[in-house]
Length: 427
Ligand code: ACO
Image (cartoon, rainbow, N blue to C red; front, top):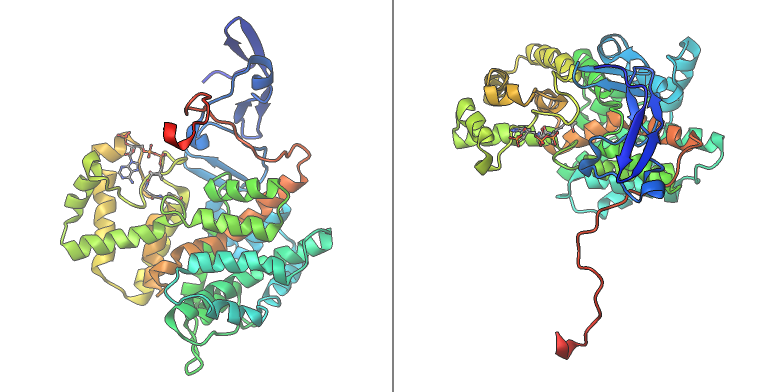
């Protein structure tokens, strides 16, 4: 495509010059912020698929080429060589930490893992059958009642540490509550991922020996989920924060947005789909045929992405991690076989090829989580654990951006035109 130098808009007899913004990877946007005040028009873009809501220097995605990078570093390099805490520092601060910065950050995160004891009562007031996702969203929102409002830079820094360090404890406690087991306290001598596995799987009767291969795969999963630019939950965090709601409230809203099955809930849906295929005795081919049939309302969960029209680079890393876990644990099950068959069939099927539908990150993450014993209803909670540092980085960028205004989209009204109220006996 030729480089665009100018953008003009002709609306009726008016000509409008639209200033262009160009990013460092040559992404271009036409600034339409004066469109309404000069022409009376707004843009109409349901689902915001073509709308840039901010300038950001955190994460870059080229969905056509299958590229994802954080602060310029390719996701494949970070997943292979970095740790989740190092990647979190990178997202939050813009650069990789030096040795002493990483040591201090790791120390801070691993020594703020305890929750206020009153959270035990909070959890006990919730039914055990509740989904852990709204439980953790409610608890994060309740942080505002336990900890000071993050106003000064110092308190904000403490808030960031609290969110990253306490979320795994919240998550594991929500799980323990749902299965009626005693809550397990964090162990600060373990790494971030090891500590989470400990809180999930240890009991007062039996310690849990963390397998380093599993802990490393979990760390990789957290890295891969850590940020993904302006997706539904991140945009929610920014939008809520744009009203100057505090960081806890904004993150809690992001957790609720992530819960939806078309977003972070998709990895749970992948496993439910695999279970359903297995239980109902479909072959992988029969299920793919159903997913292609528009009348069936069925979709191949874990396939397709709003942005990636190529292989999701995260899915490539996870495909390999999935194989590592399966080999390490010596697992073989029908769901796993079905997943591999579905992938093979869909990648060679005209319907999926024509529409650029490839496996996304959720296709493999669900299979990995299940293999390491994470229950299905915890999958989105795991996703959120990784995304926490990205949400915070995006929220801080939004707050520090002098161009931030309260988010407030417009609409095309399609309801009744103005009419007069009528008394009950005349309706
Ligand atoms: N199975 C079957 N057909 C699909 C699938 C799928 N998984 N995904 C898209 N299609 C089809 C649509 O029916 C549509 O076909 P048409 O052109 O004949 O009408 C076409 O592909 C385009 O689909 P859209 O829904 O318009 O694509 P959009 O970009 O809006 O949606 C989405 C992306 C929501 C991810 C979609 O692909 C989907 O529902 N996938 C399954 C759910 C999923 O895996 N979500 C996780 C996303 S990753 C994440 O949030 C971390």
